[in-house]
Image (tube, rainbow, N blue to C red):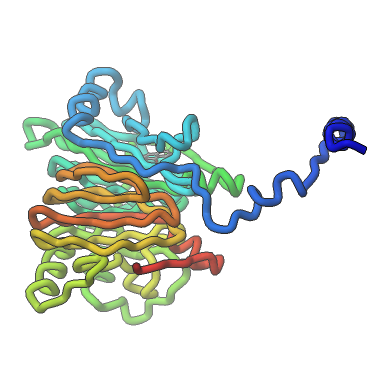
Amino acid sequence: MTSDTADALRAAYYERIAAQQMSPLWESLHNLVPKAPQPKALPAIWKYAQLRDLVVEAGSVISAEEAVRRVLILENPGLPGKSSMTPNLYAGLQLILPGEIAPSHRHTQSALRFIVEGEGAWTAVNGERTTMHPGDFIITPSWTWHDHGNPSVEDGGEPVVWLDGLDIPLVAQMDAGFAESYPEATQPLSRPEGDSFARFGQNMLPVRHRVSDPTSPIFSYPYARSREALDALYRNGELDEWDGVKLRYVNPATGGWPMPTIATFMQYLPSGFKGRAYRSTDATVYCVVEGKGTVKIGSGEFNFDAHDVFVAPAWAYVQLSASVESVVFSYSDRPVLAALNLLREERV
Ligand code: 1HN
């Protein structure tokens, strides 16, 4: 039998099994079980200087109330149509103008807000409000009521933009998405601002506190505190050749991640820092808080400035350099990889 005849017989056979919703594993085995991760997500950067006017313009296209959430989705160019930044994570830039309210709702997707620009808007989570400042990291855990608002111009309100990070693609993959709207625009407040932080944010816990869920009991991690910690460590001589000075955010009641599906980090890179290459099986979204530098991600290389967002797919080498002192926030799906025993990393 010639190989042409064998091929034709196979093709005909494949057609007949396809009619029964079957396919030959031997044709796709190498793709299904790659030797190393083959992410479809691409390294990419969103330059805030090019986006900012467009984000602000969304304010005249639709109101926060009509939009429910006035967000421009940042979509990875390697994942077209998927509203995803990485296979598990979503990213978007949300605008809230003075006097606006984004109505209360809850969903099983976990969310983080990282404040990019503007001051004084608030988010309410489970009966408590917190005021936003640039660089603050705020969580909205799975199934918690949350609404956002911004004081009127007369009360000092200004446009506020933040980066939303959610585990939307992960939850979609699991077919575990549920959502509902609160019957009113804002939820009732049951505790004054700062209450959770006083209970859980001071290296202390309420004396009879029992850990009942994996989610952090504090939902705001103010930038001033994170920045101060990084500064102090750098002054004390801490400097990792890969990370600069890098800390992870923590659930103070467990030592675990603030939310079960998303890890968050903040790192300080001194002026002139040239980091070594690092890769890991979690895919990471970065948001520059301060500074300027370059980042190599796989075969890509990007200049970054304050407020830029960039993404490192799984298993791509990442190398950060800073031309002036820089601070970079990041989030990833690390807790998911770690929980499933799929986390691998390499420091070159
Ligand atoms: C959401 O609830 C928010 O609460 C932002 O601000 C973005 C994207 C998809 C689904 C829910 C928010 C979201 C979201």
